[in-house]
Amino acid sequence: MSRKRIALYAGLSIIPLIAALWIAGFDPNYVLGNYVTTSTAFVTGNLIQASAPANGEVTRILSNVGDPVHNGQIVVYLATLPQPGSQLPIIPQVRAPAAGTIVHLSVLQGERVTVGEPVATIADLKALWVVAGVDEGSFHTVEVGQRADVYIPALDETFTGKVTQLMPDLSASAPSSGGTGGGTSTFRQNNEVPVRIDFNYGDALVYPGMSADVTIYVRNGL
Image (tube, rainbow, N blue to C red; front, side, top):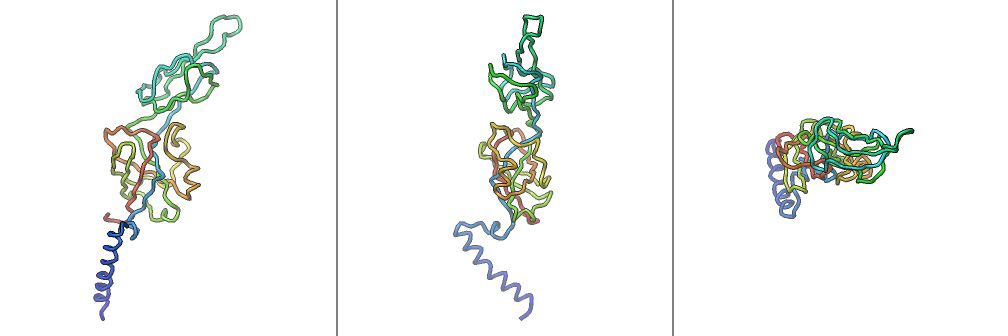
């Protein structure tokens, strides 16, 4: 029997197996290793902190989560103790260090803060991406440039994207305490390696901290 005929018979014999897997609820593409999936993923971006310039008490909050701010805009007013020889308190201002949208507030009115303490988190909502944890056993199949699907449960929408970086630096992009995503510790606990996915979300209301389900197509032509 020729090699071509053997290959033909082998190909035909696998078709019933694939059909049986499909009927049984298994995705043949996954079984055949055509893609890898993960639900340990979160939306993030360049998150910038507006921090307290001095010790004091929060007396007024001018912006809320979801509000756009411009560079230098006052976000919060503080009050500090009067200086020696003066009976008037000093009113420091917490200003936005860059333009963007407030995605997290770390303080409440009347709360005391210390110098350098984060007061608000600001992000550019037009330049977000997803960090996904890929199982260590599948990580070797993932490469920069591979196509990916990003499903955002909060929006019930799927967006197209691609792998742009393997093992990105998470120190400046982990979700804030108000987010729903994972982080470096979660990836380590799950024996996963972080991968950056850039995706096209258009005008959808995507925010840092949103969780995501990611499918990465690791075979060419898929």
